[in-house]
Structure formats: C-alpha cells, structure tokens
Length: 87
Image (cartoon, rainbow, N blue to C red; front, side, top):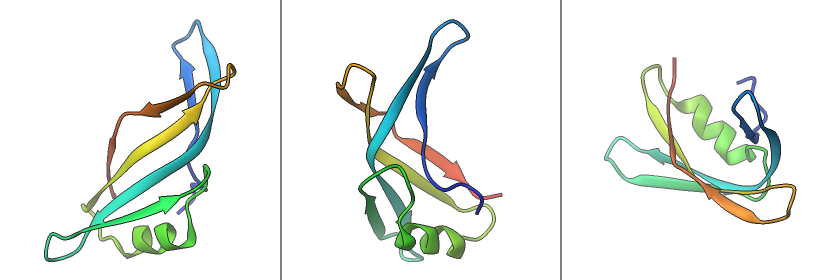
C-alpha cells in the first residue's frame, strides 16, 4: 500500500484551499458481515488500519467515514463517507 493516509482540499481549478485531516475512521466487514471500525487520530493510517487493508482481497470494499478536517480558518468540518474498492 503506497498511501500513508488521507489528504483533503478544495481544488476546483479556481480555488485551491488546503485542509488538515484531524481524524477519520475506516470500516471493514468480516466474512459474517460484521462491521469492524478502526479509528485514526490524525491523517495517517494506523498500523491496525494498514493491516486490515492488506488482508482485503481484490474486489473487496471498505469505507472511510467520520473524516474531520480543518481549513485555514480553523473551522473543523466532516467530509462525506467514501467507499473504496481494492483492485
């Protein structure tokens, strides 16, 4: 896995506003359909999150939710849930 963690920004070609990711949660599902949430306090994946991602087989999905990011004004916002598929 080449990604160390999450980055957030508003970049629409006109505005380029960086955000600092403060925390996020990954949600994995085991073979019985039970949700396994893992929390990261910062922008980087925790060791447990990395291990869970490594265990996923091709075509599996996991979710990143509860992303809290602060803009230049210091206001913290929650970013929408992301669904990711392992290729």
